[in-house]
Amino acid sequence: MNRPFFNWLVLMVYLGTGCAQGAQELPAEGVLPSRVTFPLVLDALEPRCATMDCHGKPARNLRLYTSSGLRHSPADIPGSGSTTADEYEASFQSVVGLEPEWMAIVVAEGGMNPDRLTLVRKGRGDEAHKGGHILVSGDPADICLTSWLASSIDEEACQRAADVVPPFE
Amino acid sequence: MDLILTLTCNFTLLDSRVAGKSVGAWRFISLGTRKIFFFAIVGLGVIASACVDPIREQAILDLGDEVPEIPVGPLHRAGQPCLLCHDGVVATPFSVAGTIHLDVESDKPAVSALVRLSDGLGREHRVASNCAGNFFVRPGDFDPAWPLWARIEYDGWIQEMESPINADGSCGSCHAPSTHSQSAGPIYVYPFASEPREVNCQ
Image 1: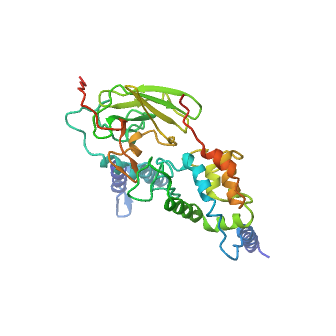
Image 2: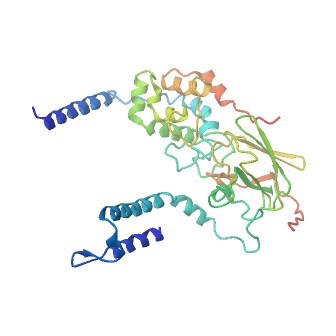
Image 3: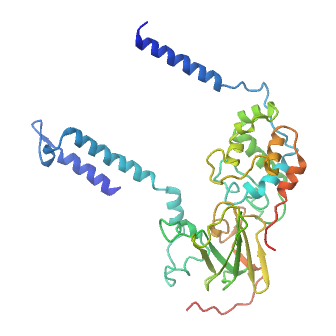
């Protein structure tokens, strides 16, 4: 066996192995996290992620609609009223549609290794994120999100995460 | 960019060849050196083009021209997103800046309104608005750790943001002149129309 052919063979084996390791078998049917409990998650993410200078603007790939940020209806104004049903729905579609294949895999596997989702990695600061390190692994907001992905939402953590109060005395 | 293109064109001209022989001053420079110089010029051109943010440039153009009666300075461009230009590159850097209006019905400025800022590390900074309603904070005085909370105090009235600021110290980025689904509208103190107040910016 001559040297160039051997090198090519080694390269093909390496690439083939790498491709096999990187490939994930998609669930037979699309698996999504719970739409019913998503409002708890959005309320927890709202003060951290959905403000108008971050994901509460249309320019973002992940677009979140909330009462304090980007409104879904042209008739609504940021800072007035409550997050509407349409806004919860639009935000849910945005979150699950960001990486639908990986979302399906993570949810199908019971929320294991949620950092396979860019949503989690960027929020935790494990990947370059203009918004910085928003979620701390293990804090209420992080628990809320990851428990939702695991189809076993921690409602108390979500409520604690949503309860954000201005610091002024 | 123009300079780079000019240098590239001159390089090409200077490397003119007549009857297969290089002419001009470049004949004294080796071919390898000339190639390095050429690619260096091209590389600089690529870098220069990458440093221009067309979206930001367009956003600055969209702000329009200065009001002729108001000189460039602390009183200018009230209500506009200050940090778009005040980023340390185009103009003096600010960490937080904006405009406070007196009431929800008009663009009258709230002069000497107290702006309290509290950042993610629990540090607080206070600044007052000027006679145009503008306030600005330099990074050397206060460079906030996000999230940042803001509160305005004026004449016994308090306006407090219900949501934090997470990334953009330009109030005008979110508080556009008009109210709509993507803008909370101008920052104001009184939630009602108020009596006009004489303001002297001299």
